[in-house]
Length: 501
Image (tube, rainbow, N blue to C red; front, side, top):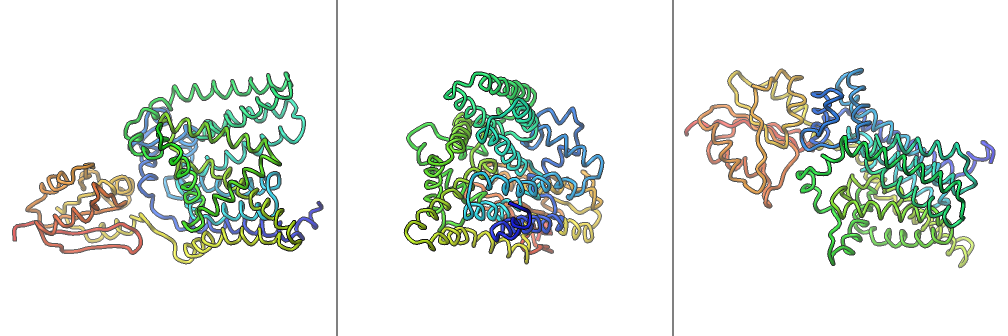
C-alpha cells in the first residue's frame, strides 16, 4: 500500500490518531511533575544513596528492579540530576515506544476492530498511562514483551536466516537485564520455535533455536546468582504478594480465572460490567488464533504457563502491575476475537460486520472517559511536596515532626529540599497486626507543645485505617492546633499540642 493510500484508510488514520493521543496523555501526566509516591521514592532512595556496585546487592525497602534498569536510571540521575522528570524519563520513553510496537503487531495479528481496540486500550488506559510516568520498570516489561514477540513473528512468516537468530538472541540477552518477566516471554518464544522445528524436522534451525535458548538460560543463570536469588528469597515481598501466587490445591482453577479477570481490570482497565463480555471475546480470540494463527496461540500458552509456574512456586507474582508484561497478549487475542465476531456477523448480513467495530468502541468507552477526566482534573494521590512546603514555612524551632511510616520514603527523599535534616524528624515504624504499638511510639511525645504528624499512602491494619487510629489517639491525649491537606492527594499534615490540659 502506498503512503498516500495508507493514510486515506480511515482505520489507519484512527490508529495513528490513537498513538498521538496516547503520547499526549503521557506527556500531560509527565509534565505535572508529581512528587514521587511510596514505591518510587523507595527505589529512588536506593539509586541516590548507592553506587553501581551497591545496586547489585539486595535493595533497601524491599525493592526489586532489573540491573539494567537500575544502571540506566543511575546514569541519568548522575548526568541530569534527581528531579522527578529524570527518574521517569526512561519509563516514559518505553511507554511511548510501546504504542508504536502495538501498531506494528496489530498489522500481523488482528484486523480493523482488533487493531482499534488493542491500540486504543493501550493509548488511553489509565494504568498504562500512569505506569508510563512512574519511576518503576513495569512499562519496560510491556515494551520489551511487545518487541520480542514482534521479532519472533518473523520466524513464522517465512524461512528465517542466521542473522534473524542472531538478532533475536541478542535482543533476548539484553532484555533480560532490563526486565524480569521477559524470561517467560523468551521461554514462550523459545519453546514455540523448538516445537515448530521439531515438527518440521528442521535440524539446522532447531539447533540454532537451542543454542539461542541456551544463551538466554546462561544469561539468566548469571543474573540469578548476582541478583535474583536474594530477591526471590525476600520473605517480606513473598508475604506482600501472597494473593498473587497460584495455590497448589483445589482452588487453583478459580484463582486462574480470577487472575485473568483481574488482568482485564488492572492493567487493561475494563470496568466490572464489561469483564465477562470481555472474557467471552478473549475465549473467542483463542479459538480464532487456533484456526488462523497457531504460532501466536502457542507463544501465548507457553508464556502464560511459565508465568503461572513461577507464581505457583512463589518466585513471581501474577497480577496487577506485575502482570503488565502479559497484558498485550490478552489485548491482541481479544482483538482477534472481535475480528472473528465481525466475520461471523458479515455472514449473516453484509453490513453487520461494523458491529465488531462498535463493540470495540463500547469496550473503550470507560477508559476514554477516565482518560478525559484525568486530563481535565489530574489525580494527585501522593503529591507530598505542597505539604512539605507548608511545613517548611510554618514550623518553629523545637517542633517535633513525626512521619508515619507510609510517608517516610517520600519525606526522606524530599527532606533536604525543604531544609530538613535527618535529625529534624522522627521516622515512624511499621507495626503490622499490632495497632497498640503506634500508641506507644507516639506516647513518647506526650508533654510536647508542638508535634507535627504527617501521613501519606494510607494503610489499613487489621481492618482499621492507621491514620484514623493515630489521629483518634492524638485527640485523646492532646489538642489539634493546625491541619493542612491538599485535596485529592491523600497526604495530610496535623499539628497537636500534647501538653497536659
